[in-house]
Length: 486
Image 1: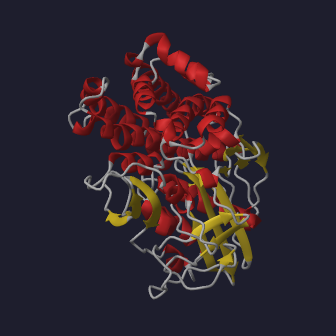
Image 2: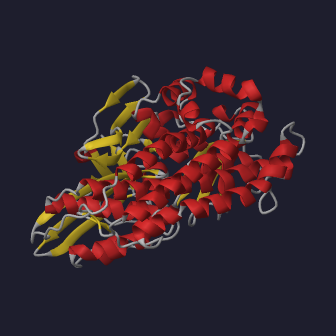
Image 3: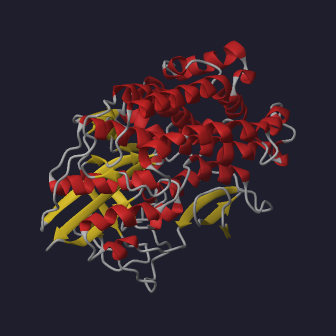
């Protein structure tokens, strides 16, 4: 057995370090380190509750709207306030714009360029992948970046700016939309749909979201081949490389979704935990969540619920190897992300993929692109339903003593904020980000986190400084390390 440390990783958000044990050219054990501590929970303690809406978005420049929506949801829970319909639609549009732009960035700029590396020069699909996805020189970047920038104008209209908007509020959105702006937003979404159908999918969004099984997915690819669009190019590569056999987290076949895009008490995507072993959907309650610090450089003992836990660095902890805590649901490892959302929401293709091969590199990417196809039509409906002249925000005061929970879905998965207010100030604030779930260290029982399990069995030749297969597995989760250590 040999041990080596890999890092930093390029094309991931923030710092990441992996310690890998390898035997006979494959990973036998992995430890994931989030090596940069930030301490936003400590910054928030003692502040006025409304200050959270200014401080929390600074956790991340990639998913700042998601952090804002989670904080606003937690404060709304503490205040007992519900956004009016226009406020809920505007919030959903802002969150969806950020999430889909993130999926697009991940696919084109983070994930696919790996297949244009020289190591794959002998593959039958290499010339096409290189022409399309080669970093900086590939044609895809020149296509996608203007489309993404145009799509992000939605956030300019709704949020004033991105990242770090102040439009998201506990009572809805502080930015009202005029009739002219509504027309412009609908036009932007339809323009984005046209780009997706022409370049990414080569088909109607409804045709993609209507694919109901893995067999139907391969039939769709074979009908016109990989040149019909970038999704088809990925499928052809995935089939050739058997990406469905790479990056499976066999000890964590539990898929968490907080549910997302709330409107009048209903969620577009369902909340729950899909248990792969029993093939059943289980209820999710935040009371079942704990954070274990036994292998983190954090003070404390055992596992605490976020409302009673705290974040206090302890670099002297001998068993620690990461600044990331180990969140657990009912004491078990779960994984989250776009695939989990689609599985919990009972999409037949997502359920079929995890039944066949679990969460793996292939199914995580398919889940992300499937979500794009499903959400854009909903965005069209939300924008068309906005009623200019009606309220966008409900004003309410913050009680002197209260607690609140905000559970939403960022692009990378389940995001939770827990706040305790005493004497009009924030007494306690805890955050569990999607990558905290996926990239957690071992817990008190010694159980590795989701990525640590997913890396076991991955080819990692000792002569290769940064094995490509390891990079595929890491990037398939689309980690955000700055959110992880918040």
